[in-house]
Structure formats: C-alpha cells, structure tokens
Image (cartoon, rainbow, N blue to C red; front, side, top):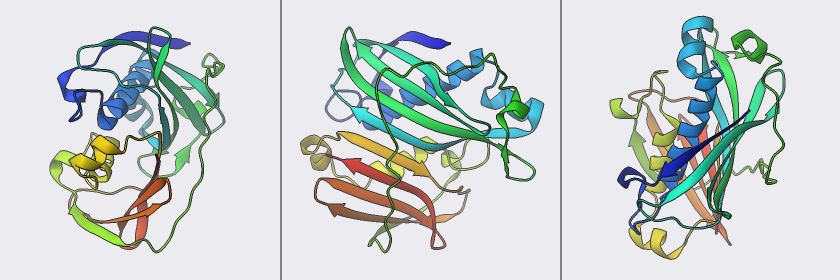
Amino acid sequence: MKYTKEQIVNAAMLGNDECLSVIGTFQIIENALTELTGILKIDGITVREKYNAIWVFAKTRVKFFNKILWNEKCEVSCFVSYKSLAKMNFDVEARRGNELIFYARVEACALDIATQRIKKLSTIGVDDSIQPETSNFELTFSNFSYDNLPLYEQIKVRSTNIDMSHHTNNLEYLRFIMNTYSVKDLETKPFKEMEVVYVSQSFEGDILDVLKTHEKDKDIIVLQKGGKQVVKCEILY
C-alpha cells in the first residue's frame, strides 16, 4: 500500500533560511515511514513488544529538488519499494503540486534484541500481504568507502541523543553531521544529494570521533567509536 498525507512545514522543521532544513527533511521521512509501519502493524513498538526485536535503519539516501517555506503545504507519500528475506526499502517523497521537493529511500532491517542478530522479516509480522510498490524515481545507494580522514571534533553521546531502543537516534547522528557546517556553509552550498549509512550502534556516554574531508563536489563525514565506524555520510553539491 501507499501511505499519503498532507504535510505542513512547521517551525521545528526550518533551517536558517526559513525553508525546510535537512534535519526537517529527515524528520518528515522518519515520521512517514513509522506512520506507514504503524498502519501495517509492524512499527517499532509493536515488533519490540511482540517479537523482542527493533527496527534499524541501515541506509538513507535523499535527493533534494526544491525548497519549501514555513507553513507551506506538501503531499508526502511513503511505500515499500523492495522486500527480501531480511530487509525492506521504503521510499518517501514530498510534492508541492507537481513539483518534487525531495525523494528518499531508506533501507531497514530488524535486529533481535537478545542476540543483536538480523531477523527474518517473516518473524516480525511482515507477511505476503505487504508487497513492494513501483518506485516513482530511480535512487540507488552508492556504497562509498573512505579511510584515514582527518579528525574534525569529538562528541560525547548524551541522554537526549538516546531513543526508545536505548541507542543513539538516527536524527541525532544527522545533527552531529550538520554541526560540522557553519551557517555560511549552509546558506551558500545547498545539498543536492545525501547518503547516510548506519554501520553500527553507539550508546549514552560513548565518545565519537567526527572525521571530515572535502573532495571536489562532495563532503565525506564519518563518525567513529574506538576507531570503528558507526556512521558514514556522503554529501553531494
């Protein structure tokens, strides 16, 4: 099924230019996805309580097309675009009339809480009634890889960074990434495309090394814990 709703760009979603921010975009994506899984009865709370599992976002890629101002309306759609034994892709798009604001794809899987191993989707309520829809836009993950990046800063994971699964929330990683940019950067270098890959988990009290480099028309940011990747991000201009 395709879940569609009307969305107003509220104040919490704005950037410094009075338009939908990158973080606001990811908020819309996460909300649409969780609302769809709630309708399908495979949301995070349900799979935790019934199957002792948690949903984990493995990758998110977003292509940005047009700006949208505070209090403007858009139509947000979310649907399953791919399903295998152990992972699902969710596509999310926002449109203002015929104009595309952004298009995103999220790859997700489920982890067994006790073993921290990936579970088959059939064991958490994903049955044959949930079938992929045809994607409206072609968006592929880049599978980028970079090593030996320079250290930008260190961050300590705090209590407000933690979600109901007791690990660092995906949006909090995005805030860590976005804080490597100045206001001037955000005003003069709009993003065209962005991919965030969630490699492993971090928890309250962990110290994260933020590594960053610039290469031609893109930036690479990596968050590490004890020398091991937690999150990596590619941003294209």
